[in-house]
Image 1 (cartoon, helix red, strand yellow):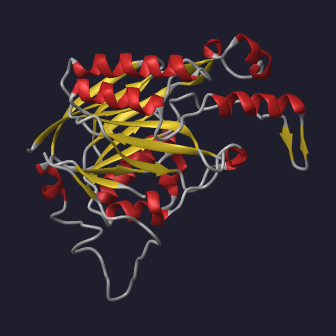
Image 2 (tube, rainbow, N blue to C red):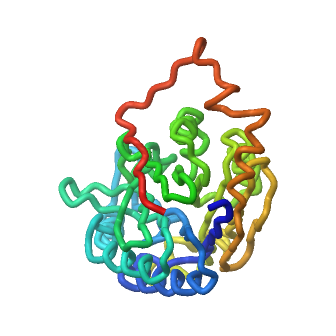
Image 3 (spheres, rainbow, N blue to C red):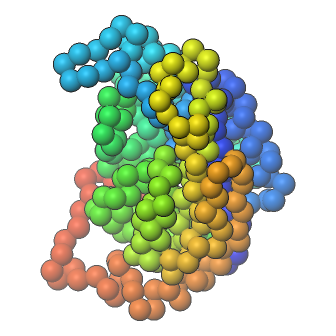
Length: 309
């Protein structure tokens, strides 16, 4: 298959509400299904929310009881993997006959720690892969634990090899190289970064990896937060995340988006044969590599998951 249709969803969940966010996720998958995409991508921590603007009552050496209660609410609305919520999304992916990749805050069922995770669902209705963010950024480290190399996942879908990193993991050269070394062709980059400089980062990744890059962000307004949280974000702007979702080809050219200032769905048809043409003069893991000088190894990275077309 040379032509692959992909859809990117730029939206806000029903913030901090697990069940209603899952319902909205299913509705959005059904909307996308009308375009018959092979792959649907959601933003970082779409379920139950990226908690932008919240400090959970924490300072160095000091935590408040109010902050602990806020954390408990976030924890209770996070996603068990696998669990009831992933079963619902699996069913929606099967109905859409599409691969679905979605960012969630994952609740570990043994330790109770939270992870910023990217889940992969197959058109068969199976949960087939999971990546846990290996380095939360800044105060994200208060709420999310670190993943490890065992979840640097790539999936051979039959039409292309997909995989990706979450938000500022994409600034980590060796993390990117872990994706390239597995031959990623459609590189997924769900994020919470709406800056214009992020667009340049995604273009660089496309050109460096000679792959298609799908950047996906939420569009969130202050009014989307629950009434009981409004006093916590009083100093935030009305638009708290303007989006910036985009689709970029292997030569770094934007082919859809960036979508800014609104919710929406970006859909584009990718010509996978462009990847080989782009690698004629640069291939970071092939003829442009120097294994006689450099050695690269990732502790625990799994082999690519192979699925039938």
